[in-house]
Amino acid sequence: MSLSFNIEKFVGQHITHRTESLFKPDLDAHYETFKKEIEGKKVLVIGGAGTIGSSYIRALVKYNPAKLIVVDINENGLTELVRDCRSRNDIQLPQDFKTYPVNFSDKVFTKIFLHEGPFDIVANFAAHKHVRSEKDIYSIEAMVDNNVIKAKALLDVLLQYPPKHFFCVSTDKAANPVNVMGASKKLMEEVILAYSEKFKITTARFANVAFSNGSLLIGFVDRVLKQQPLSCPSDVKRFFVSPDESGQICLSACILGNSGEIFFPKLEEETMVKFADVVEPFLQEIGYDMKVCATEEEARSSQEDIANGKYPVYFFSSNTSGEKLYEEFYTDTEELDMNTYQSFGVVKNAERRQIAELDNVIEELKKVFESETSEKKDIVAALNKMIPGFEHIETGMGLDQKM
Image 1 (cartoon, rainbow, N blue to C red):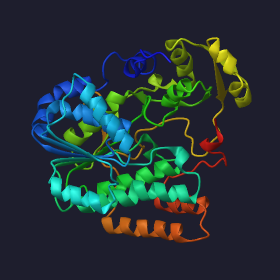
Image 2 (tube, rainbow, N blue to C red):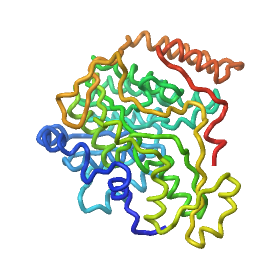
Image 3 (cartoon, rainbow, N blue to C red):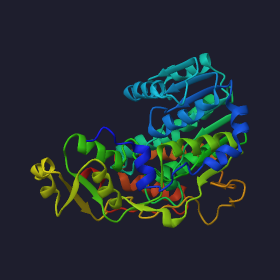
Image 4 (cartoon, one colour):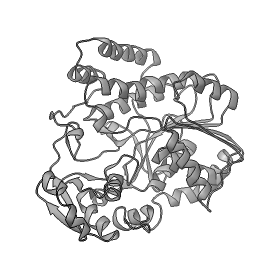
């Protein structure tokens, strides 16, 4: 693979078709607010080693916080975060900067929080984000535990020393969810919004982050590095933002938003891109022609073609459980503010429940998980009762069955 491949440049040219950030007008217009709220402040970022968390950090440090603590269970990811930030000439990490490879639900995290805080800004990016993670009752329990139960426990910790700004990332899949991941994020939204009267809390729903960790597109890079064929759905279309833009929308929601608000990008439907349409320009960028294969087997047996400059690609129709062929950032029942910002829309009246009610919801979910006879359909049925409009799409086929 060509070492000159630049992800941000490729995304701008072939996916978002933007020469500068979608959010630049609002970042420029509110520069003084960002500077006032961040410069000299103490910041805690949870899940900061992932694509969105690290992009948030790169956006944040340009406003010179005094202290930055980053927590993530991915020790290797934290190492790359440090190397990446230290190698850039456009940002500078604060002198008081530490990374900790710990889980935010561990006791040691609370010790770190109490010793290093209190914090002015806390942002949480720790979450299960892939639909492929909802295979069965066990994987779903881990997902709900991380996205909902641990998120609530974090808020209880923060109540000891509430930050001025708290942000927790959501997803477009929380709007009219059709998969358990989206449903868990919808519940997460309700949990954090239930606390939004106790201290300032905001979140954001946004598009696919092009070439984010674990995504199909970064998988193309991994496959090429291993000289393995590419596999791609032919019919799935998505909104996209660049990695840098993902951090910018999260920082904007965190700093500019009012408590209880959900930010989303203003993207027109005609800007949506099929994954399949990215394959050929990607291969051309790194010096290959595309060879379309009829089956996975044909693609896997085409090693000689790679040596001759023709890269095997298998296109398939999407048929996996929980797959949504379109994206939504808001529902028909939500009140929108489309005027305050040029590049962001804001959900103003997202559904809120009482903390006690959500405690009951969590206890009901725990009972399903504790039952030795529970299956995936049982948790789906429980979520159907808890989340109006949740309609899970079950096909019996998961992404682990795909190349």
